[in-house]
Amino acid sequence: MAPWRTWLAVVGAVACLLCAGLATAQPYSEWVHYRRLDLETPWGPQRVLVTLPRLGGHREHPPGERYPLVVALHGRGEAQQGPERGYLGWATRYGLPDHFGAMMRGRLYASDYRGYVRQAHLDAVNESLRAQPFRGVMVVTPYIPDVGRDGVGSARIREIGDWIAGPLLASVRERFDGAARTREGTAIDGISLGGRVALTVGFAHPEVFGAVGGMQPAIRGDEEALAARALEAAEASPQRIRLLSSEEDPFLRATRTLSEQLRERRVPHRLTVVPGPHDYSFNRGPAGLEMLYFYDRALAREPLPE
Image (tube, helix red, strand yellow):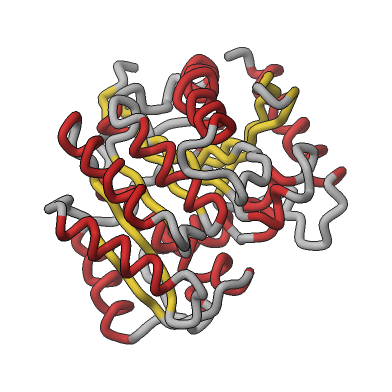
């Protein structure tokens, strides 16, 4: 890509963040680059933010390899903001740049988790980071409408899933040479409403997503249906599945029930329960950190000839 086009992309992303009018907007980060894509969707034009580690020399990928690709979906609050602002949730409301910074620093502290972490878990993560430092992932954050009242098999959620698994990923890969091309290098995850949608879409597209997750997923009443879909996906192409909840999460019981349903069906997965509420402080703490930590290890690294 020509340098002036890269510069325009950066300026566009920064301008977009500023125009969002959010008090928490972070138009610049020493840890990440922002890139914005303008795409057509089944529900109209929208913007997509791509966040990737800041490297020297305006590089958009490490030497000789592509970044694993993580589609991260926002919660209901951002869905209600609409497409002009909702897609910025991870960058401006959830503190994703700070999560990148903490991971790239190589050592996490309880303050990075906003205090929502047990010492044993923190020690285990830091020991893992010492043995295998964070290498980075590319995070794609589109807008999704509020489909909280739609069933997991609804036409609207299928439409969203088909767009994410098809045109969205195709556009990201066309724009970024350094974005993963394979299912083994591609994941989908999300928080609350986004967690429910991510699990539904991920299990519907095992040919696209090698890993699937949900953080505090708003899945009450959907446990059995999601477990059945996870089994179908596992029989087609096994996936790495993770669930993250917290002690004060109103969806903790449903998340544990889903985990039990998955175990009954012998679908491998990881359930992590940490301290904390279901609110933005959790999003700014465990949510982004655990997402980056998991997928940095779970997803494949693809070679990219220089």
